[in-house]
Length: 196
Image 1 (cartoon, rainbow, N blue to C red):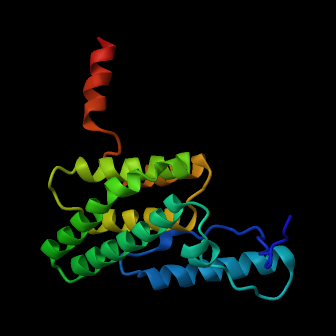
Image 2 (image 1 turned 90 degrees about the horizontal axis):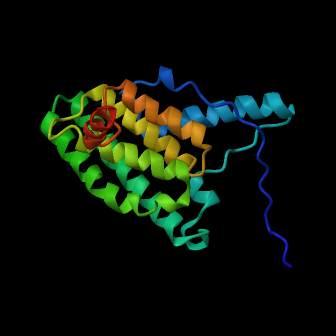
């Protein structure tokens, strides 16, 4: 049996407060805030010197990914986050057409992401809710706050593809609170039919 060449310590980390994020936050801003939250919680928990947080790409490098599904999921989520960032930038400039185009490019990635749902129940639930959210808009563009929430949910999913299911439910509830419908519309008709 071989021993690992590098052991990565995982101290407990307090999650940052996502409620204070704004539409203007870029992925770099989010990375900085997450690194700062990690520094605070790791130094408080261990009383030790600062340790750099390992990124998801370092943890699961493409050539050493545990499964091909994980590699595909991480790369598609990275591309999706680029599209969502582009949509946010476009809405800030008042260019709703370019924002909607970027969201549609992201939406085109969702069926392939859905094929990676076997990674975890959490991953599958969030991707399914996101897919339903965009389909249920029925051609209407997302508003700026909905795009920001989508960005936060996708960022968390990419950072924690194997999160606890309770955490995934919290992320899905954020989409609902933003005014998105996360179940297929047919469910409502089916529920009405079953109530009769």
